[in-house]
Image (cartoon, rainbow, N blue to C red; front, top):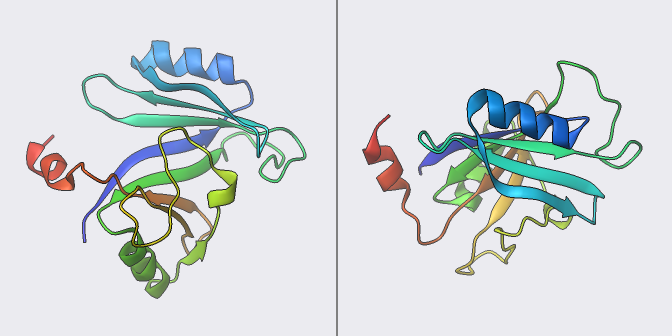
Length: 154
């Protein structure tokens, strides 16, 4: 099984201010610009560096919502994105190591993810909580080989 850490998602209080900060400071370019998720009443911006491909996801949630818990400065990690070649296999391995799998797909509606039943040829996504409560969003990308990424070096 292959897995690749692809991005970190952080919570922000002001989407416009944070987008400008990371774009100008780190040279990141929006690849999913200001996507609103009506199920959560949230906003998401995905940024990527044009040369390295490193990504940062900015997440804003309204106060009082399911994920809109009080904001504590310095504790704004939302989730870690991991691309894998076998979502069910990765989740099973995570559980064996003390992780707890969650079905959070009803809350996500990225325009580039298609949530499908296991065994389907579309993209799959899953969520697992590590033993300390940090969330990993685990996804595959059918038709895109992880081998090319591993062979490319850095």
